[in-house]
Length: 236
Image 1 (cartoon, rainbow, N blue to C red):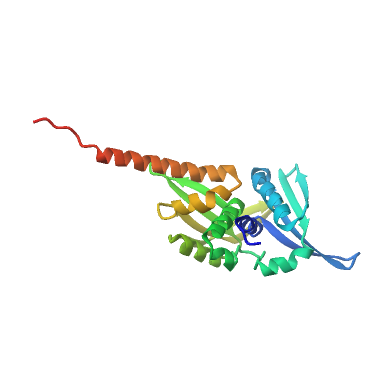
Image 2: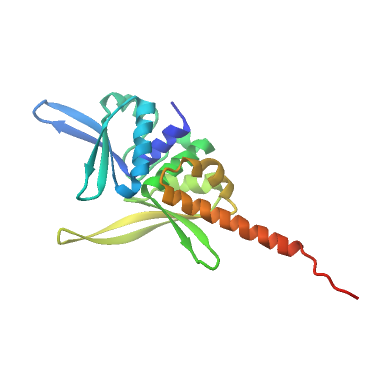
């Protein structure tokens, strides 16, 4: 079953998705479900996740639209898949933890990272005069295994830090910690992004930011090479 599609599915499931085990008192049994709840702005990811769920696990599931919150949820029963999840080393608890079989294969890890970025990642362009493209992945606890895999697989520097968050919900002030992995798209990993990550990303706005940055960087470097190779004419 190991594949880039499954690796992407796991990346999404470990970020915006979750595994729910619920006891049904009337029937005296447990219900096991995989759920993915996203805003309308991420519906492209949900549609890909739904399609891959059907292709990989042969499940149909159901979709609910919440117009008040501009959100959509996809759910399917997963009781029969529990042995498969164990065999594939899929851990649904926070933070996202890539299985070892994914870390050991560049194509799998690239697809997995595409799912993580689609789920809990954001793409930011810094410094308009000399652009820098930063990828930031947020989790509820330190994603140490993912952090180490990113640094090792792409041979880059990255940072892992805590951030205090403040929000107001139904008149109550909520404070808590979140943790962020941050790294940049750079000459060291541009080839990795182009070969293994970008084609798997489902959310267009995130994908376009990365591809736009890479294209502008390549154009700038090309102009610099052309200007550097031009020898000014001087008459005697």
